[in-house]
Length: 331
Image (cartoon, rainbow, N blue to C red; front, side, top):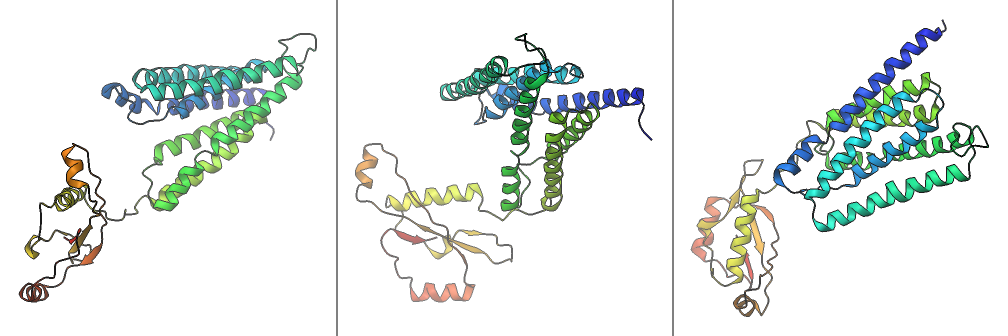
């Protein structure tokens, strides 16, 4: 049964509103990050490129919506909100970023939002005709199609960005860098905008969201597969720091012999303790360099071996332990 024009209009409005609501939630997702930046007065190593790209995408879709002759209201509202939010994020970032990060962010904004967007607008206004060939600001026509294809290609590239995250999840068997809520929100967003684009027969909006839906489903499947995966056990940071300090003492000649009773052990999953072997590389200028106040770099190699049994240790103590080669000690 074919949908009446009234029902079609209602469905279009519903999916447009839902798309705006979900997209608004996605735009607000980085708020905790920027609250942390504000509290710590530092960007903490966060990159500005996702927000620069998001601002460029919103501005490009605004230009596309301007060229549409109808059904452009929903696209204009959400992308106007998006431009405002992303501009706010970038302002906060620029305030608390280091000088190097500010320069890099300024270059990104110049590349995406000034050079690229300006070139697209200039070329499509001058070289591509609209519906009315005699007006420079004419809408529709070939101009709308060209800008529509540019938006679609850019949207596909943005939707393909999570591929690197998915590859990391498969390699590390950890979903630490792929939050489920964000993946679910992006998938839901793609569904809403697909149906909105399909109902208004705007395939420049609908088609890229098919890819977004597919990638979103793939991310959620990976999350379900790897959410309970245990990370491989690693040496505790405090223990590693202790080993490094011990290696420095060995390097400076403060420790001549390490007794068997001082063996540093770590819990092993199978119940057997492990021995950590620290190998220190020597140089001939340690004492001189340290007198000058220069820092020494000590490299430590970790070799996990099962600790021998008690009786075996006692026999070694009775027999006497042969001194290891110069600069090499087993801890």
